[in-house]
Length: 137
Image (cartoon, rainbow, N blue to C red):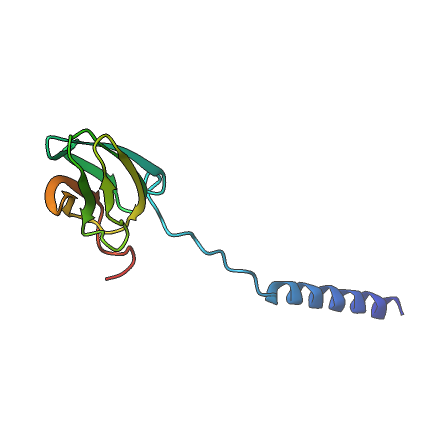
């Protein structure tokens, strides 16, 4: 009788091990690599002076959240906008001595973007990074 009890115990233990090994495990999904500096908000302070945007050239990494504060030091009013980001940045009216704030995500890499004053290029905005999505060919 002892033999059958021991045999039953071994069979049950083996069945438990088989069930534990066969149980599906949740697959860990690795997050997509994002440069650590890309998601941090970039605060840019721009000045309109002499019909130009200063500093004349601004660079941010692709994916950065951008907060732009622009101050008009010219004696005349200006319309401020960003060429290439028209759908993300609404034009801002700048009265003499006035300021405006715009917020957007720099999600379009390249160097073809310009700060516009009254529809004319007055400074350069560059977004560093690739237009290719990692993992795609």
